[in-house]
Length: 408
Image: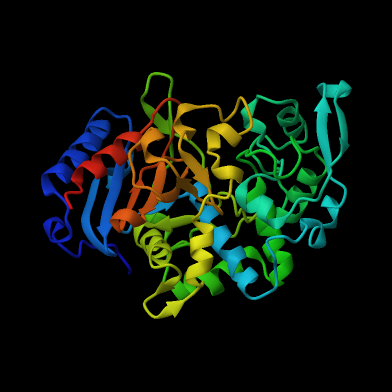
Protein backbone atom coordinates (compact mmCIF):
# COMPACT_ATOMS: atom_id res chain seq x y z
CA UNK A 1 0.00 0.00 0.00
CA UNK A 2 1.43 3.38 -1.07
CA UNK A 3 1.81 5.83 1.81
CA UNK A 4 3.42 9.23 2.08
CA UNK A 5 6.52 9.22 4.28
CA UNK A 6 8.90 11.86 5.56
CA UNK A 7 12.10 11.57 3.55
CA UNK A 8 14.44 14.22 4.92
CA UNK A 9 15.07 16.33 8.01
CA UNK A 10 13.64 19.85 7.57
CA UNK A 11 16.99 21.54 8.21
CA UNK A 12 18.57 19.66 5.29
CA UNK A 13 16.26 21.47 2.87
CA UNK A 14 16.22 24.90 4.49
CA UNK A 15 13.13 24.58 6.68
CA UNK A 16 12.87 25.47 10.36
CA UNK A 17 11.60 22.53 12.43
CA UNK A 18 10.42 24.82 15.25
CA UNK A 19 8.33 26.86 12.84
CA UNK A 20 6.82 23.65 11.45
CA UNK A 21 6.06 22.65 15.03
CA UNK A 22 4.12 25.89 15.44
CA UNK A 23 2.17 25.01 12.30
CA UNK A 24 1.20 21.62 13.80
CA UNK A 25 0.22 23.17 17.12
CA UNK A 26 -1.92 25.79 15.41
CA UNK A 27 -4.07 23.20 13.67
CA UNK A 28 -4.04 20.87 16.67
CA UNK A 29 -5.96 23.62 18.50
CA UNK A 30 -8.69 23.36 15.88
CA UNK A 31 -8.91 19.64 16.59
CA UNK A 32 -8.96 20.20 20.36
CA UNK A 33 -11.72 22.79 19.99
CA UNK A 34 -13.84 20.42 17.90
CA UNK A 35 -13.71 22.66 14.80
CA UNK A 36 -12.06 20.02 12.61
CA UNK A 37 -11.99 16.26 13.24
CA UNK A 38 -8.35 15.81 12.28
CA UNK A 39 -5.86 16.74 9.59
CA UNK A 40 -2.85 15.74 7.53
CA UNK A 41 -0.28 18.30 6.43
CA UNK A 42 2.88 17.75 4.43
CA UNK A 43 5.60 20.13 3.29
CA UNK A 44 8.14 19.10 0.66
CA UNK A 45 11.16 20.84 -0.78
CA UNK A 46 12.99 19.76 -3.88
CA UNK A 47 10.50 16.93 -4.13
CA UNK A 48 11.45 15.43 -0.75
CA UNK A 49 8.92 15.30 2.08
CA UNK A 50 10.46 17.24 4.96
CA UNK A 51 7.43 17.51 7.22
CA UNK A 52 4.48 15.16 7.59
CA UNK A 53 1.95 15.31 10.43
CA UNK A 54 -1.31 13.54 11.11
CA UNK A 55 -3.57 14.56 13.99
CA UNK A 56 -7.05 13.72 15.24
CA UNK A 57 -9.63 11.44 13.64
CA UNK A 58 -10.88 10.52 10.20
CA UNK A 59 -14.07 9.22 11.86
CA UNK A 60 -14.97 10.67 15.25
CA UNK A 61 -17.81 8.28 16.09
CA UNK A 62 -15.74 5.21 15.27
CA UNK A 63 -12.60 6.60 16.93
CA UNK A 64 -10.54 5.98 13.79
CA UNK A 65 -7.42 8.17 13.55
CA UNK A 66 -6.12 10.12 10.59
CA UNK A 67 -3.33 8.07 9.05
CA UNK A 68 -0.95 8.66 6.18
CA UNK A 69 -3.03 6.41 3.92
CA UNK A 70 -6.38 8.03 4.76
CA UNK A 71 -8.52 8.82 1.71
CA UNK A 72 -9.98 12.28 1.31
CA UNK A 73 -12.75 13.78 -0.79
CA UNK A 74 -10.74 16.39 -2.67
CA UNK A 75 -13.73 17.98 -4.44
CA UNK A 76 -12.49 20.92 -6.55
CA UNK A 77 -8.89 19.75 -6.40
CA UNK A 78 -10.21 17.47 -9.17
CA UNK A 79 -10.19 20.50 -11.52
CA UNK A 80 -6.39 20.65 -12.01
CA UNK A 81 -6.43 16.92 -12.82
CA UNK A 82 -9.12 17.57 -15.45
CA UNK A 83 -6.98 20.37 -16.88
CA UNK A 84 -3.97 18.03 -17.16
CA UNK A 85 -6.18 15.43 -18.88
CA UNK A 86 -7.34 18.02 -21.42
CA UNK A 87 -3.77 19.17 -22.05
CA UNK A 88 -2.74 15.59 -22.83
CA UNK A 89 -5.26 15.67 -25.67
CA UNK A 90 -4.04 19.10 -26.77
CA UNK A 91 -0.48 17.81 -27.05
CA UNK A 92 -1.74 14.85 -29.10
CA UNK A 93 -3.61 17.13 -31.50
CA UNK A 94 -7.00 15.70 -30.59
CA UNK A 95 -8.09 18.94 -28.95
CA UNK A 96 -7.14 22.60 -29.35
CA UNK A 97 -7.41 25.35 -26.78
CA UNK A 98 -9.07 27.49 -29.44
CA UNK A 99 -11.62 24.90 -30.56
CA UNK A 100 -15.24 25.99 -30.10
CA UNK A 101 -16.71 23.51 -27.63
CA UNK A 102 -19.68 23.15 -29.99
CA UNK A 103 -17.35 21.08 -32.20
CA UNK A 104 -17.67 18.40 -29.48
CA UNK A 105 -20.93 19.41 -27.82
CA UNK A 106 -23.39 20.67 -30.48
CA UNK A 107 -25.84 21.80 -27.78
CA UNK A 108 -23.52 24.80 -27.22
CA UNK A 109 -23.66 25.86 -30.89
CA UNK A 110 -25.80 28.96 -30.32
CA UNK A 111 -25.06 30.33 -26.84
CA UNK A 112 -27.11 33.26 -25.60
CA UNK A 113 -25.92 35.88 -23.13
CA UNK A 114 -27.86 37.53 -20.31
CA UNK A 115 -28.91 41.13 -21.03
CA UNK A 116 -31.37 42.25 -18.36
CA UNK A 117 -34.21 41.33 -16.04
CA UNK A 118 -34.94 38.20 -14.04
CA UNK A 119 -37.38 35.32 -13.98
CA UNK A 120 -40.02 35.55 -16.71
CA UNK A 121 -38.81 39.02 -17.71
CA UNK A 122 -35.18 37.96 -18.27
CA UNK A 123 -33.85 38.93 -21.71
CA UNK A 124 -30.89 37.50 -23.64
CA UNK A 125 -29.05 38.03 -26.92
CA UNK A 126 -26.91 35.79 -29.13
CA UNK A 127 -23.28 35.60 -27.98
CA UNK A 128 -20.80 37.52 -30.13
CA UNK A 129 -18.51 34.52 -30.32
CA UNK A 130 -18.31 30.83 -29.38
CA UNK A 131 -17.25 29.30 -26.08
CA UNK A 132 -13.72 27.99 -26.58
CA UNK A 133 -11.95 25.14 -24.78
CA UNK A 134 -9.61 27.69 -23.16
CA UNK A 135 -12.64 29.50 -21.72
CA UNK A 136 -13.62 26.30 -19.89
CA UNK A 137 -10.09 25.84 -18.56
CA UNK A 138 -9.91 29.41 -17.25
CA UNK A 139 -13.52 29.75 -15.99
CA UNK A 140 -14.19 32.59 -18.41
CA UNK A 141 -16.92 30.80 -20.41
CA UNK A 142 -19.87 32.68 -18.89
CA UNK A 143 -21.08 29.64 -16.95
CA UNK A 144 -21.88 29.87 -13.24
CA UNK A 145 -22.93 28.01 -10.08
CA UNK A 146 -26.45 27.91 -8.65
CA UNK A 147 -25.24 28.58 -5.11
CA UNK A 148 -23.97 32.12 -5.69
CA UNK A 149 -27.41 33.75 -5.30
CA UNK A 150 -25.91 36.90 -6.82
CA UNK A 151 -27.15 36.98 -10.43
CA UNK A 152 -30.40 36.16 -12.28
CA UNK A 153 -28.62 33.38 -14.23
CA UNK A 154 -27.76 31.67 -10.93
CA UNK A 155 -31.50 31.51 -10.26
CA UNK A 156 -32.09 29.82 -13.61
CA UNK A 157 -29.58 27.12 -12.63
CA UNK A 158 -31.55 26.52 -9.44
CA UNK A 159 -34.84 26.37 -11.34
CA UNK A 160 -33.26 23.80 -13.68
CA UNK A 161 -32.41 21.51 -10.73
CA UNK A 162 -28.71 22.38 -10.60
CA UNK A 163 -28.59 23.52 -6.96
CA UNK A 164 -25.72 21.08 -6.29
CA UNK A 165 -24.16 21.75 -9.75
CA UNK A 166 -25.34 18.40 -11.14
CA UNK A 167 -28.78 17.24 -12.20
CA UNK A 168 -30.01 14.64 -9.68
CA UNK A 169 -30.16 11.18 -11.23
CA UNK A 170 -28.48 12.29 -14.46
CA UNK A 171 -25.16 11.38 -16.03
CA UNK A 172 -22.49 13.81 -17.21
CA UNK A 173 -23.87 14.12 -20.74
CA UNK A 174 -27.38 14.83 -19.45
CA UNK A 175 -26.22 17.39 -16.92
CA UNK A 176 -24.04 19.21 -19.46
CA UNK A 177 -27.02 19.40 -21.83
CA UNK A 178 -28.95 21.22 -19.08
CA UNK A 179 -26.07 23.69 -18.64
CA UNK A 180 -26.23 24.40 -22.37
CA UNK A 181 -29.89 25.40 -22.14
CA UNK A 182 -29.13 28.20 -19.67
CA UNK A 183 -28.00 31.63 -20.84
CA UNK A 184 -24.41 32.70 -20.24
CA UNK A 185 -23.88 35.22 -17.48
CA UNK A 186 -21.51 37.24 -19.71
CA UNK A 187 -19.81 37.14 -23.10
CA UNK A 188 -17.17 34.35 -23.20
CA UNK A 189 -13.70 35.59 -22.32
CA UNK A 190 -14.79 38.88 -20.77
CA UNK A 191 -14.95 37.98 -17.05
CA UNK A 192 -13.84 35.27 -14.61
CA UNK A 193 -16.54 33.32 -12.80
CA UNK A 194 -15.78 30.09 -10.96
CA UNK A 195 -18.32 27.69 -12.38
CA UNK A 196 -19.42 24.29 -13.68
CA UNK A 197 -16.93 24.70 -16.56
CA UNK A 198 -14.76 21.76 -15.51
CA UNK A 199 -17.73 19.42 -15.78
CA UNK A 200 -18.25 20.63 -19.34
CA UNK A 201 -14.51 20.17 -19.96
CA UNK A 202 -14.79 16.62 -18.64
CA UNK A 203 -17.49 15.89 -21.19
CA UNK A 204 -15.34 17.42 -23.97
CA UNK A 205 -12.52 15.07 -22.89
CA UNK A 206 -14.87 12.10 -23.17
CA UNK A 207 -15.91 13.05 -26.71
CA UNK A 208 -12.40 13.92 -27.89
CA UNK A 209 -10.83 10.77 -26.41
CA UNK A 210 -13.64 8.30 -27.03
CA UNK A 211 -13.33 7.12 -23.41
CA UNK A 212 -15.33 7.76 -20.26
CA UNK A 213 -13.68 10.17 -17.86
CA UNK A 214 -12.86 7.52 -15.25
CA UNK A 215 -11.13 5.28 -17.81
CA UNK A 216 -9.19 8.16 -19.36
CA UNK A 217 -8.00 9.42 -15.99
CA UNK A 218 -7.01 5.93 -14.85
CA UNK A 219 -5.12 5.03 -18.02
CA UNK A 220 -3.55 8.36 -18.86
CA UNK A 221 -3.00 10.09 -15.49
CA UNK A 222 -3.34 7.87 -12.41
CA UNK A 223 -1.58 4.82 -13.84
CA UNK A 224 1.45 6.57 -15.36
CA UNK A 225 1.94 8.77 -12.28
CA UNK A 226 1.53 5.95 -9.74
CA UNK A 227 -1.58 7.31 -7.98
CA UNK A 228 -3.06 3.99 -6.77
CA UNK A 229 -5.93 5.29 -4.64
CA UNK A 230 -7.12 8.19 -6.82
CA UNK A 231 -10.50 7.83 -8.48
CA UNK A 232 -14.15 8.76 -8.73
CA UNK A 233 -15.33 6.24 -6.15
CA UNK A 234 -13.97 4.04 -3.36
CA UNK A 235 -13.91 0.28 -3.52
CA UNK A 236 -14.97 -1.99 -0.65
CA UNK A 237 -11.28 -2.45 0.19
CA UNK A 238 -10.68 1.30 0.32
CA UNK A 239 -13.86 2.29 2.15
CA UNK A 240 -12.50 1.81 5.67
CA UNK A 241 -9.76 4.38 4.93
CA UNK A 242 -12.15 7.09 3.67
CA UNK A 243 -12.55 9.98 6.08
CA UNK A 244 -16.02 10.85 7.32
CA UNK A 245 -17.31 14.17 5.99
CA UNK A 246 -18.40 16.90 8.42
CA UNK A 247 -20.17 20.21 8.11
CA UNK A 248 -19.57 23.31 10.19
CA UNK A 249 -22.58 24.33 12.30
CA UNK A 250 -23.52 27.91 13.18
CA UNK A 251 -21.75 27.61 16.55
CA UNK A 252 -18.47 26.53 14.92
CA UNK A 253 -18.69 22.88 15.91
CA UNK A 254 -19.06 20.10 13.35
CA UNK A 255 -21.47 17.29 12.54
CA UNK A 256 -21.43 14.44 9.99
CA UNK A 257 -22.96 15.33 6.60
CA UNK A 258 -23.51 13.31 3.41
CA UNK A 259 -20.85 13.49 0.77
CA UNK A 260 -19.40 11.93 -2.35
CA UNK A 261 -17.77 9.74 -3.40
CA UNK A 262 -19.69 6.68 -2.30
CA UNK A 263 -19.01 3.04 -3.00
CA UNK A 264 -19.57 1.97 -6.57
CA UNK A 265 -19.17 3.85 -9.84
CA UNK A 266 -21.27 7.04 -9.80
CA UNK A 267 -23.73 7.79 -12.57
CA UNK A 268 -22.10 11.21 -13.05
CA UNK A 269 -18.32 11.47 -13.33
CA UNK A 270 -17.51 15.01 -12.22
CA UNK A 271 -14.37 16.65 -13.57
CA UNK A 272 -15.24 19.55 -11.29
CA UNK A 273 -15.22 17.78 -7.96
CA UNK A 274 -15.73 14.03 -8.06
CA UNK A 275 -12.42 12.60 -6.90
CA UNK A 276 -11.10 10.94 -3.77
CA UNK A 277 -7.37 10.54 -3.22
CA UNK A 278 -4.70 9.94 -0.60
CA UNK A 279 -1.95 12.35 0.35
CA UNK A 280 0.46 10.10 -1.56
CA UNK A 281 -1.65 10.45 -4.73
CA UNK A 282 -1.78 14.23 -4.47
CA UNK A 283 1.95 14.38 -3.75
CA UNK A 284 2.59 12.46 -6.97
CA UNK A 285 0.40 14.88 -8.91
CA UNK A 286 2.03 17.98 -7.42
CA UNK A 287 5.45 16.51 -8.19
CA UNK A 288 4.45 16.14 -11.83
CA UNK A 289 3.66 19.85 -11.90
CA UNK A 290 6.72 20.91 -9.88
CA UNK A 291 8.94 18.90 -12.24
CA UNK A 292 7.23 20.48 -15.25
CA UNK A 293 5.58 17.41 -16.70
CA UNK A 294 7.96 14.55 -15.88
CA UNK A 295 8.04 12.17 -12.91
CA UNK A 296 10.33 9.18 -12.31
CA UNK A 297 11.24 8.93 -15.98
CA UNK A 298 7.67 9.25 -17.24
CA UNK A 299 6.94 12.42 -19.20
CA UNK A 300 3.23 13.13 -19.20
CA UNK A 301 3.34 16.70 -20.55
CA UNK A 302 6.02 18.92 -22.04
CA UNK A 303 7.62 21.49 -19.77
CA UNK A 304 6.20 24.23 -21.99
CA UNK A 305 2.66 22.90 -21.54
CA UNK A 306 2.98 22.85 -17.73
CA UNK A 307 4.40 26.37 -17.84
CA UNK A 308 1.35 27.41 -19.88
CA UNK A 309 -1.02 25.70 -17.44
CA UNK A 310 0.52 27.43 -14.45
CA UNK A 311 0.68 30.96 -15.93
CA UNK A 312 -1.93 33.66 -15.50
CA UNK A 313 -4.34 33.76 -18.45
CA UNK A 314 -6.50 36.67 -17.34
CA UNK A 315 -6.06 39.50 -19.87
CA UNK A 316 -3.65 42.30 -19.18
CA UNK A 317 -2.27 40.57 -16.09
CA UNK A 318 -5.56 41.11 -14.24
CA UNK A 319 -6.27 39.37 -10.96
CA UNK A 320 -9.39 37.49 -9.90
CA UNK A 321 -10.82 40.48 -8.08
CA UNK A 322 -10.45 42.90 -11.00
CA UNK A 323 -11.59 40.45 -13.70
CA UNK A 324 -14.00 38.44 -11.57
CA UNK A 325 -17.76 38.65 -11.98
CA UNK A 326 -19.20 40.93 -9.34
CA UNK A 327 -20.35 40.73 -6.62
CA UNK A 328 -19.39 37.06 -6.28
CA UNK A 329 -15.62 37.55 -6.61
CA UNK A 330 -15.14 41.07 -5.29
CA UNK A 331 -13.28 39.95 -2.19
CA UNK A 332 -9.96 40.62 -0.54
CA UNK A 333 -8.71 37.06 -1.01
CA UNK A 334 -8.70 37.52 -4.81
CA UNK A 335 -6.23 40.42 -4.79
CA UNK A 336 -2.92 39.62 -6.47
CA UNK A 337 -4.08 36.19 -7.67
CA UNK A 338 -4.60 35.29 -11.32
CA UNK A 339 -5.77 32.07 -12.95
CA UNK A 340 -4.17 29.52 -15.27
CA UNK A 341 -5.67 26.26 -16.51
CA UNK A 342 -7.43 24.76 -13.48
CA UNK A 343 -5.17 26.49 -10.93
CA UNK A 344 -4.85 29.91 -9.33
CA UNK A 345 -1.52 31.69 -9.86
CA UNK A 346 0.04 34.33 -7.58
CA UNK A 347 0.94 37.35 -9.71
CA UNK A 348 1.59 39.92 -6.97
CA UNK A 349 2.58 38.46 -3.58
CA UNK A 350 2.53 41.91 -1.96
CA UNK A 351 -1.24 42.13 -2.51
CA UNK A 352 -2.26 38.61 -1.53
CA UNK A 353 -4.14 37.85 1.65
CA UNK A 354 -1.85 34.91 2.42
CA UNK A 355 1.90 35.07 1.74
CA UNK A 356 3.43 32.86 -0.96
CA UNK A 357 6.13 33.32 -3.55
CA UNK A 358 5.55 34.84 -6.99
CA UNK A 359 4.17 32.29 -9.43
CA UNK A 360 2.89 29.95 -6.71
CA UNK A 361 -0.05 27.95 -8.02
CA UNK A 362 -2.58 25.43 -6.72
CA UNK A 363 -6.21 24.94 -5.81
CA UNK A 364 -8.48 23.89 -2.94
CA UNK A 365 -11.56 21.75 -2.33
CA UNK A 366 -14.95 22.26 -0.70
CA UNK A 367 -14.12 20.05 2.29
CA UNK A 368 -11.15 22.24 3.34
CA UNK A 369 -8.39 20.51 1.37
CA UNK A 370 -5.68 22.38 -0.51
CA UNK A 371 -2.37 22.08 -2.32
CA UNK A 372 0.07 24.53 -3.81
CA UNK A 373 3.43 24.56 -5.56
CA UNK A 374 5.79 27.48 -5.00
CA UNK A 375 8.43 27.37 -7.78
CA UNK A 376 10.41 30.29 -6.34
CA UNK A 377 11.13 28.23 -3.23
CA UNK A 378 10.92 24.74 -4.80
CA UNK A 379 8.21 24.05 -2.24
CA UNK A 380 5.05 21.93 -2.35
CA UNK A 381 2.41 21.83 0.38
CA UNK A 382 -0.77 19.86 0.90
CA UNK A 383 -3.35 19.96 3.68
CA UNK A 384 -6.35 17.71 4.26
CA UNK A 385 -9.28 17.69 6.60
CA UNK A 386 -12.97 16.97 5.84
CA UNK A 387 -15.13 19.91 6.87
CA UNK A 388 -17.51 21.83 4.64
CA UNK A 389 -17.09 25.31 6.15
CA UNK A 390 -19.42 28.19 6.85
CA UNK A 391 -16.99 30.60 8.49
CA UNK A 392 -13.91 28.39 8.95
CA UNK A 393 -10.88 29.80 7.10
CA UNK A 394 -7.78 27.65 7.48
CA UNK A 395 -5.62 28.45 4.48
CA UNK A 396 -4.34 32.01 5.14
CA UNK A 397 -2.80 30.84 8.42
CA UNK A 398 -1.49 27.68 6.76
CA UNK A 399 0.31 29.72 4.10
CA UNK A 400 1.68 32.18 6.65
CA UNK A 401 3.02 29.42 8.88
CA UNK A 402 4.61 27.57 5.98
CA UNK A 403 6.29 30.78 4.81
CA UNK A 404 7.67 31.35 8.29
CA UNK A 405 9.33 27.93 8.15
CA UNK A 406 11.44 28.75 5.06
CA UNK A 407 14.87 29.89 6.22
CA UNK A 408 16.82 29.75 2.96
